[in-house]
Image (tube, rainbow, N blue to C red):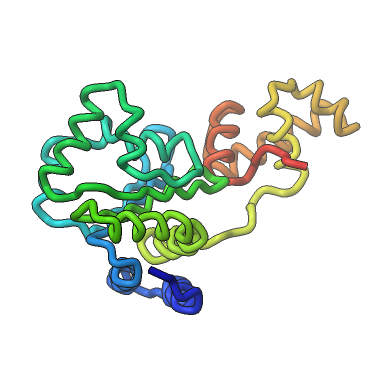
Length: 247
């Protein structure tokens, strides 16, 4: 099997221009057809706080498996999700299953096989503001052709998954990339506060008075609608207003 790169590029463009969830579902069905795969599933976990994420699902899996999965509450024990939470690398189910030592996780994979989802690939996408997107493809047989389809899907889908993630955020959550509403100096003060620096420390680092730092942080509290430094750091991290400096 060979994959036409231009066809993938066309699907990327369709994803970027999607206006409805149904448009995204159509693109994912087209991707399954292109690779010769059985079904897909896409989940987006977008933090709305540290304990209550927004959850968006675009389901192309068989309905009986979807219903069974949610009725049994497999989320906490799904080893594919656990892998995607801690890794940026796609993983094939059959490889993941060989590494499992927890019976509850093994049970999830065994029951998927009972529903003719015999193998699959999960492609994680992580973003600076803490989003996690997981694109999953499955196959209903273990033939050489099916395994080659999964291999190609795993090798080519990571770039597509990034465009998919942004489209799902835009279409389903109404989220678009935005400029920070904090000033550069306010972000700077919060950034140092996140490293545990006191107002006095920050003032020395930035060559301003401790009172000036305090006023900047109080402005942050008002803009973020929080009441203390810890909450401001947490919320600005989730919003993407402050991020670790990489260079």
